[in-house]
Image (tube, rainbow, N blue to C red; front, side, top):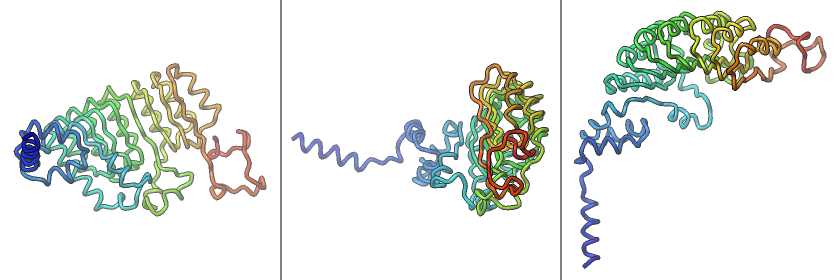
Length: 314
């Protein structure tokens, strides 16, 4: 008798119509899925699942970083991500998420989006607190100004490898987003661009921002509450670094990896202003022989500061 009862329960389970789950139950199920799984799977099941997958509560965060890391198969970048077709795909996802969130969007982590999509999202995300758009080659000051005016609660900003963004955006963000605590303004490795060859367009690599000191001075002047700053491969000099250290006295983390225009002496001088500093990543890097003319010395060696040229000050 018990076996018959168990068999009937199994049959009932098999015949259960999952599309009849209540919206609350469906939302609880979908919340456990990644954004990619919801878009590629749950939304395609049936109309009720599509409606549940558009629940604003599910779009408080749009984080595509796990998808990028998975698609990259261990690589940090891929050539197809730098194409207009791929940008349109990212834009479509960002626009949809901004609409479905109905103002509840607080975190955006994407790559390769456009000015238009970012402006669209900013206007509908007044509670945005985290924005990461690294390697967005088409994003300019225009959309960053929109972020500054529409998203005053911003506390974290990652504009790494976004070469069309200037110091003017940093000034606007600093003036309008007083809660900013984390800034990531890393650049691609211009000292050894061969690692990006065949992936990042050559013309984009050649457009590497040259105004590192101006950006640093802007950071120091308009972003006094920063606690975490990343400036990898920035072309700032000691004067720029001192501006950051004098203006951002609460800094706890500072990443200067690849900043070739800095000297050890200059870093020590600037860091004396940072009483709360816990982590300092120094500009330790390897410069290939091909980057410099070494005939004068006959072989590759470690130079101290009296031998260093401006670009070779480690």
